[in-house]
Length: 244
Image (tube, rainbow, N blue to C red; front, side, top):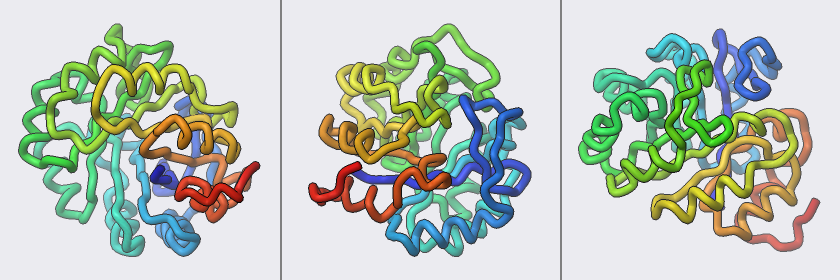
C-alpha cells in the first residue's frame, strides 16, 4: 500500500482541518516546503497536497507554495483543490505536479473529467469527498444529492489514475477510516481506491492494507505524532514486525 503524507495549504501555511471545517484549523507549519522535505527525508515517496483556499475560491490560490513544494520534494506530488478548468490543469502539470485530483467539477460535469482522463491518461484522480454517502464540493462547503458511488460509476471506465475517497465525518478526527464505505466503493468500481481521512493508528493502516487498499493519505496522525512515518512505511511496504 502506498502512503501519501498530506500537506494541506491555507493562507500559505500547512494546516489540518477537522471534518473539513475551515473554522477548526490547526496550523502545523508556516513553511510547507520544509514539511515536504521532512516527509521525504523520512522515506515518503509520494506527497498529497491540497490547496484549501483554492477549493473555496474555485481556482488555485497557493501557487507559489505549491510550486516550491514540487521543486524541493523530488518525489511525485498529487494536487487537489481549485482545479476546475483546462487551463488550471495544464498549469498544474507545468508546475511539475504528477497527478491532479478533480472533485467539484467532476460532479458538475462528469463528461469533462472523462475528456481530461483521455487527454492525460493515468494522471487524473477523481476526488470523492462524501458526507453520509453524498458528494460534497467547494471545499466541503456544499453537499449534493449525488451518491459518491454513483458518481464514481459514471466515470469508472475512463483511464483515471485512481479515486481518492474521503469520508468527511472521519477526516481529522483520528477515529479511524470509514472501512465499510471504502469496501463498498472498491466493490463498485475497478479503479484503485485511495483511502483518506481518520487514520490514527498503525492498526488502521494494517487493516486497510490487509483489505487490499492500494493507497492511503495520512495527515493529522503524522503531524501529531500518533505514529512515526518510518513505522507506517515499514508496515505498508510489508514489514510485518511493525505493529501498534
